Length: 126
Figure 1 (cartoon, rainbow, N blue to C red):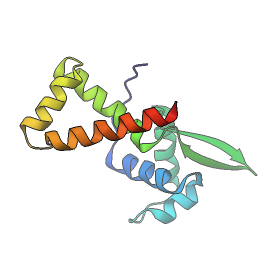
Figure 2: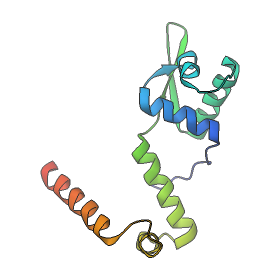
Figure 3: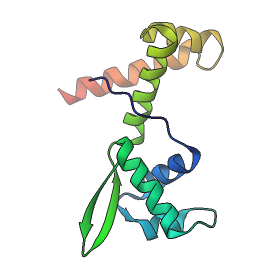
Figure 4: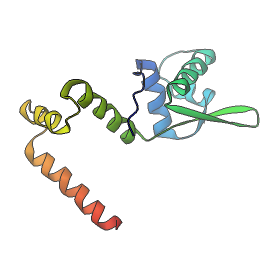
């Protein structure tokens, strides 16, 4: 299931991170978590943009919009990594991982550790 979403701006990412951390929230509650002075209208506009991009959904509770992220941070990150692999490595995760190892971002021991953790988790899920 491939889907390409528009990239996030800095403020969009900040608000999405707040939703990942706190779960469902009103625009007012989101604004309370932002570390800069912004108007309610600005927060609502950014949340609406996030919804248009597919990162956020909302429901209406007692007349108030309650926002939630459409997916977990990990799922969004995985999608972004897949898009990077598609764009820069012809879709090859092997080429991407090789590049990460070659540049020292990840070492082979870390890769083995991650693979081992995933393998154990998959075995337990059966």
